[in-house]
Length: 190
Image 1: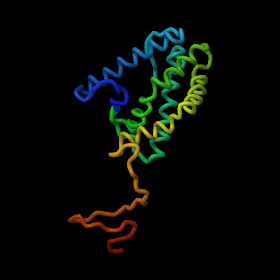
Image 2 (image 1 turned 45 degrees about the vertical axis):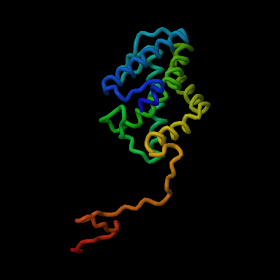
Image 3 (image 1 turned 90 degrees about the horizontal axis):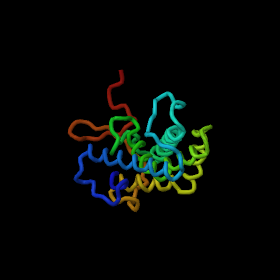
Image 4 (image 1 turned 180 degrees about the vertical axis):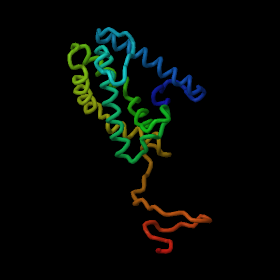
């Protein structure tokens, strides 16, 4: 997951805390770059849960972008039958994997859309961000990229791995490793 975020670095020797710090530093730099690109003043990431309107325009845009990206990632994770709670970077949350996947694209797709929307003015930044994201998700083929990236992360052979299309079979396991067909009452009927 970190290799996808930092393709020019070797994160294998870094601790989890160091990796999280690297990610935080990467985002701070990116926010400043987007501020300079768009001319939107940046005073740091500030978000108060449940109080969207308290944020300044770029923070409102970033919050809207994050929520949209989480929705897109959740749809792809669910469509592929993956567990939304499987976490690499995020952990301990029922949507850890969703957050991980969405974060792969935030600097390329989400945050630029947020700053572009904020550059248009302070009214309806959230709505403009969502509309810009819809266009950029389509233009970048983001859904297909999410599928490929998830397969790369989870399948031993990556995107090109052969996946058997056989139907799932659920069995019951008994003592000594014996398996029993599911859906059948194997006990005594009372």
